[in-house]
Every structure is written in structure tokens, then in C-alpha cells.
Image (cartoon, rainbow, N blue to C red; front, side, top):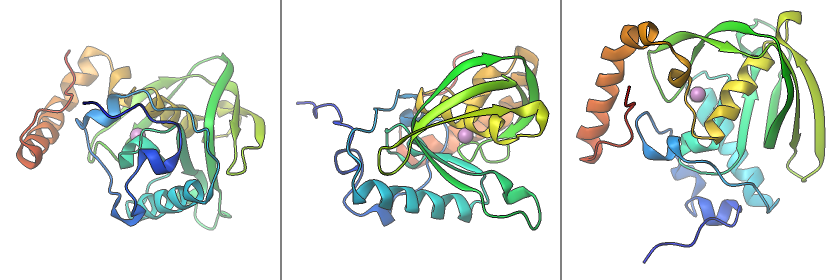
Length: 204
Ligand code: NI
């Protein structure tokens, strides 16, 4: 028998003890799933986001999506000013985010907490509007412009991809992919040793 699909609540999509959540690495299959919309805005949702910030901080990340901790819900957290010394805190929570009216093009070197040690230049939109909900379910909308200095625009595009099962290595051309292939194989081998299964490795 299969478990019924997620109802969009943290309780149905994560373990009872959120402290047990850990980062998952490529090629874990949860990273390839389309995450479910959040429909229940409760204390468990806030607790999940707090746990995500903890895990992101431990790894000095600037963005983390719920599938990266094994929870297939449309949530990510960001702290984009972390890399700027003395910058004010910029912790933000994005629930059910949608990008609208994307324009232009920009290239940025990206990494991902699910791919330790791998970095590559990725092509992204330069300007767009993003709408999302906060912990209370309130809707928000903001325009971001990367070439005007809003690095957050890169972070949210990378994290939103995670909610659709898309990983930054999917954006690489064949040459770029060849350059990171050995490190991808190392992650695939580590996953196989840890789980006895192949997971979802890249097939190109
Ligand atoms: Ni990532």
C-alpha cells in the first residue's frame, strides 16, 4: 500500500521530531520530486523554518529549500546578506513562491548545499517579480533586479528550482558538466555506500 499524497502540512510531510531533520545530498530522490503547496499555516510550519535556518547556518549557506532537508513542501529560506561583512540580518521565509514576468539574462557562479564542493556558472533571469506567502499565509510581492545589485534575485531562482525538482547542475552545458563529473560521481558513490541504492543520478 502506498501512503496518500501529502496534504501540504508540515505534520504530514516531516518527522514528528524536526530536530531529526538533516541535509540530504545529491542524488537523493527527494531532490527530484515536485514539492507540494503548503496549505496549513500552523506552529509546525514556523518550527520547520526555524530548523531550516539552523541547518543552513551550520553549513554557512545563503539559501535552503525544504526538499534539501527531505521535506517535499514549497518552502525555502534565505539569508542573502550573510556574505557581506557587517550587513544587517536578512533572514527571509518564502512559502508557495511564484516567479512572474521574468526578463533579461545574467550569469552567476553558484553552489548548492546538496552538492558540497561543486561550483559552476549558471544562467538566470535578470529581473522578475516574485510573489509568496509568509508564515501567516499573507501574500507578498516584490520585484528583484540582479544587475541593479539585488543578489537575492539569484538566490531565489536557485531555491525555487529546488521546489520543482530542478538542480543547478541541470543548467550546465556539456562542457561544464564534464568539468564537475568526477565530483558528481563521488557524491553518487557516497550515496550508494550510505543507502545501498543509486538514488536519482543525472542521466546525461
Ligand atoms: Ni541548492
